[in-house]
Length: 447
Length: 124
Image (cartoon, rainbow over all chains, first blue to last red; front, side):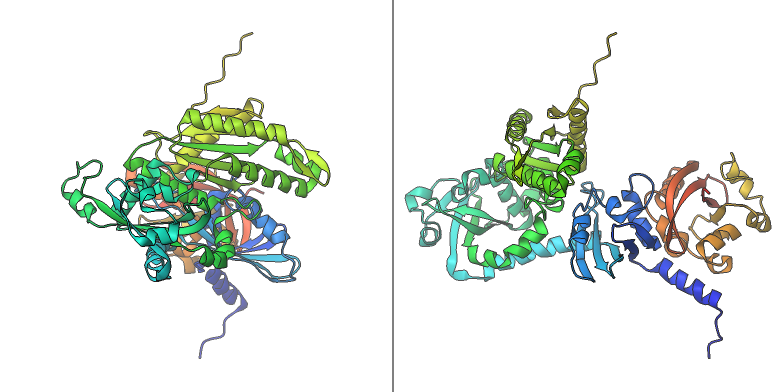
């Protein structure tokens, strides 16, 4: 029989048990104030702390999961699960050096005064899932609903090479409409670029396929939600490995593209899909979607450099809007800003809310001067419009920072940092204005 | 001896365990495999762990996992890899008995010195 343990020994064993638990456990007040936490929580959270302290979990995670406070305060049941395994992206990673880091967060309401948070590092799991997701998309594309596909053969630069009746059945185009035309004719005008079309061929070469879901357009201009899989018919990746200098596309290269109308299937999974990729308040892309799209765009840039610009916008004096008009007013401003952003920019641009009142737009195949012009147009519309809440007009302005990708930018985080520096300069210079990176040093004071 | 003292790393090796127990800040000494070799009374009391249960254990995974990140553990690794002297004081939050406690940590290591040290000071 075990010898009896003293209370002190029991206590130490329990303490050690909690010290060693491989997940972070944190007990909070309803407003997020940290009451108790175990060591792994501190290990995961301290790198996010901006002031060297850990007083409030919502504050510590504000920059990466701005919706937490909102989710907690809007949870009406007396107890229960507020969020389950929510993914929080901490950074974009550094290409070839480190993977993007992710935390998983589960938040439980224990009673009217206490919350419990469970945190774990899921960086590796996310990496594995990404690979799995590609496989899944592929099987979905080839196995499901085989009655409604269009089979399109493309030449080496993505032009439609041959006709068959499945193209007419799904897209409504005729043979004369499509032969010799780039495959972008199946997409709405602002949903792709020439660079993007070539990217997808490159990606198909590199990984064996490229899958993309998004709006497609029929001959009569009606839109449908389509899945398009592109597969190289010749294993060019292997051949190019022997001849690394092979630029561009050899003439004999060919691809097969399978387009499927999945509008109906999408409707069924739409809510779940939107919950994962969209910001809860504004409905535009969330932080995680932005980072995923941004990393992919940087990879594409590395493979074949082309203009890529990034805009960051911040609602000016947002705290004052909240103070004067309350949170409902603040939320209305954020939703208005997001809606106008989405309608100002192209469908191929990634329009996202990064957190708080900070928004980003990633513009593929768009150089700095084009980006500046678009950003300026957006800034002016905001200044001119205002938003009405409960019969009262709220006028507000935005400041913007603009940066363009070039070879000296080490990765997505670095590009974001540049745009952020420019944004900071715009705010410092009086707000309701734009600055581009590099920000000129302030002129010497003449006395 | 106090927490901010210059050249404290050189002095610590000469301080016996009994004297280290008298200090009013935490002392954790560990070797180049990050095995805990010294753990004074202040630290044992604050963490709620007995010295005997901690000595011989791996520091960053078993004794103080809260410091296993780039802010603390990585800095010791980097200093060892570069063969450089480490003497840095940072603000940190420890989870002493699962309560968040603001502390100052002093990270100490130098090539040729037997143990590396983490000193823990709890501002009153």
